[in-house]
Image 1 (cartoon, helix red, strand yellow):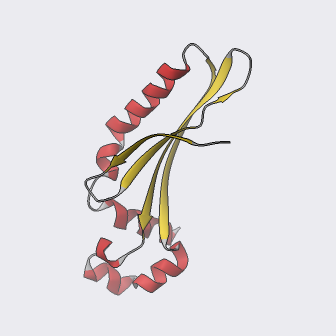
Image 2: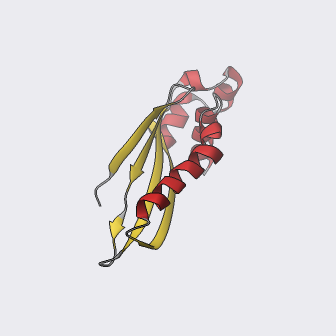
Length: 120
């Protein structure tokens, strides 16, 4: 499936949020509407306080998580009439922006998300 980036938003924590439309046709008159929000987070020392790096050395974090961690939030709505698909996609984006954008924009988000990936 081809990803179509519809918006790229620089965040206050120096990351970039990208919004993708992965909508696909499932019948002649209906679609599966999919919105994906993605943030690529580099695993680097500046994202962590010194006490965290004492507990979890950067090399250890990078070894398990990799050079980057990817936050992804996906919302899917099935059997949406083609006449409604743009409005449904817009609603999914608006809901994400209202509920999750404040969280992923926080300065502490990147480090906390990398630690979550590390401990899973």
